[in-house]
Length: 176
Image 1: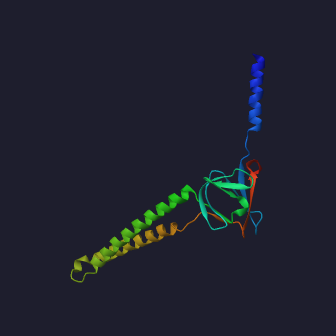
Image 2: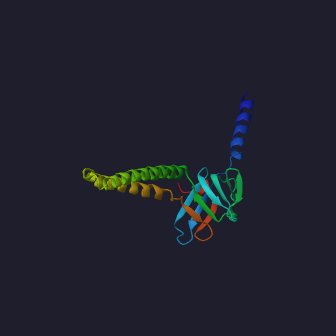
Image 3: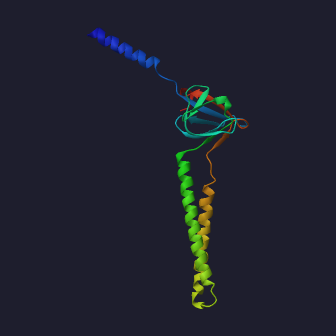
């Protein structure tokens, strides 16, 4: 019984020792400032551009030290001129910005209608609507500008031809 247990434990340890795959991460070093280093780990949502300007978006996997995979597409690391973050939080922010912009536009239109109604020369009793309409229209315009500006935010973009050097390193070499 002890020999069976010993063989089982030996096989189990051998399996653990030889079946572990090395996990990799992307190390980005800024060419103009070599002390500026960024690390991108597996599992993050990224957008990768190939040399032919084809864009691939999805989860990042790094199977070897010379290739990266975006969902099911495998690309050689030296054939990637640009890489950009494409996180879920960024997508949620853009959706919230679109909703804020649309709501702001609706409030702006409502304020403009109140303002135009207050400018009616036939009824002087409605003159108090002018400042109310200006305040509501101004608030709507600010909300539209704020929400619309969020739509133009992109993830961090790394230009690998001119500004950044990319290398694939084992996760064990990353600083903790």
